[in-house]
Image 1 (cartoon, protein in one colour):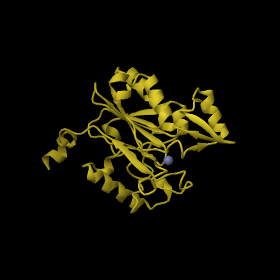
Image 2 (image 1 turned 45 degrees about the vertical axis):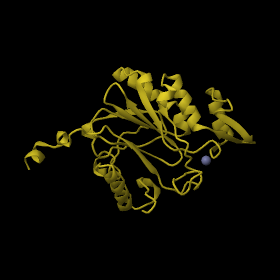
Image 3 (image 1 turned 180 degrees about the vertical axis):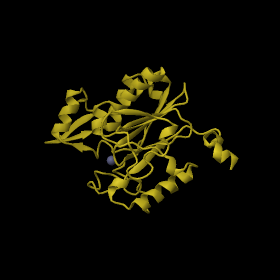
Image 4 (image 1 turned 135 degrees about the vertical axis):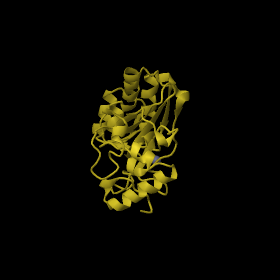
Length: 245
Ligand SMILES: [Zn+2]
């Protein structure tokens, strides 16, 4: 519990995970029983969450949507995603009360999940890519992130074979820069570089701060990332019964 694992599937007791989540969200004035999580599948699927989804994923086994990108326009609805080396990408619209959160490991990055979110927001809500604010979470850095030839080949095939993205460092060993590729994908989709906040923190280089799937060889917890539209009047969510109580 001291290290604040937030995911149910990593071997910690469910009670400890729930308590960790409660503590984290209490710090920000949110109720961890109302957070929304998806079942992350390392894909590029996107789902839109509304007030009816409140609390979906807050308890073990209660997440239903299988997707790696979450979108909401619902005030106070807390979207969450989980990672230990993978990158989380946060989106805020300057045109509409809307936020989104994406989980990008190498598969999601190869599939261009960040740019897919941008395109979906444009198609569904007419949001201009150049008016989106985007933030990156800490993630595994290029020096720590080694992939094999099979993975490297897929990135090369997709056009990410420049030294800024992928570099061979030994036979069958390549270093991959998740942040650089995700940033370039977003820029190519119309997001302005000046509207992107990138993180220089590496999850693997900083064992005192972060979980790292690679550093800890798979036996590790998960960090939680969340984003929500700040509620401007909590009374909006109270049921009639609560109002009269
Ligand atoms: Zn590193």
